[in-house]
Figure (cartoon, one colour):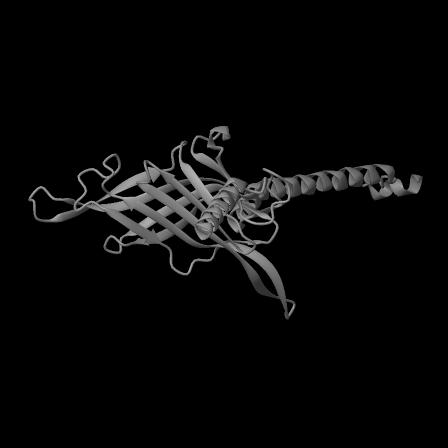
Length: 277
């Protein structure tokens, strides 16, 4: 009897401990605060502190099979899917691994992003320098073609999983948030006859580690595409300024030359007039 009481007490303590751990983790879908209806905002918090933040717009292009009119052949159709405002989220934070999970339409779709943090060796001036970076090391989409809103008349409907292979995307220095307005495209290979699913993400700002302030991203790390576009936008302005400066210098030199010429005595063209000088 005493052993039974001890076992029940241990089970109760374990349940309370599990409840306390789960209660310490909070997830919030703040997409309703985004001025862009296509851009979602997701936050994972642990122990009352933000540990993962992600803002992005995403589109999925998913191929699936339908039966042809002859009832024999299969035709591949394609559906476009985006994350709705009321999506459910879950997440996990760690010192070197984090995860964001987004589900919608009664778990007919589940989008998973896996992050990792590790050392990265980079050579500068002939010397190897080791820095800490974070990156996306895996992206996964679980989808069910039985969901008729997006998969009309799907042949042999069922659940499928599409994943990346050996991914290293959005590599960012540790302690900074990745920012990119330009579209980033990934291809996932599906368990549905190895079909390729296209994931297009844009208007991105993500930070899965080392967030210093609650609900606030750390210093930005812009993608190369954004920096190139910014340079291309600034180039006409810089060239215009240089051209304007050249014109101003030319006019100034010409004006100075006119003043200098006017100050010098004018020599007569008729040589006979030299006698009177």
